[in-house]
Image 1 (cartoon, rainbow, N blue to C red):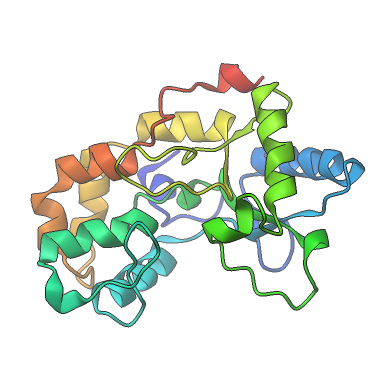
Image 2: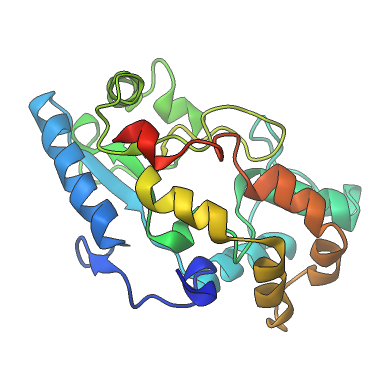
Length: 234
């Protein structure tokens, strides 16, 4: 992929799943196969969020940086901006939201999913641990996905944020298509990321991000599963 594609600035390689969601064509085809298998098992596996552009991720980031959106601690409780310095605030944002330019959603390989058959049509998906863990409406779907991933029959999808390694909080709802994501992980470098960030004058807390870029890259950009290759799923 080009630098613009890696950092969410080029959308030309995507295909439409529907009027709201886009993915890399290979990931879209794999998702359709996974959806068919899920349907046979009694689930309606649907995307909540797929591709997200740099500008969209930047809007989320800036709103959180400025306090217009809530920033949560690891337990899901709102934090107060006046109680944290800039670096602590950046780390708190990164716990639940990707750095613009470094989101896996930029690649067209990643998506957030839910079971549409488990909730009413007008249900507003929150993407919270309570929804996907034991007792939550989407827990059975994710238990089924766990089994498929473990046995290597998940059509190439895995969970990049399955465990808490001290960076991004666990996100059971987040799936990644390994054949595309593994190559993007390899290509995305600190220099590539910094070039995109430095080229954006409206990037909130940019100086703090640049100062701590190496730690951010190691803790929040590279997932614990970065060493997994596409061969593990094919």
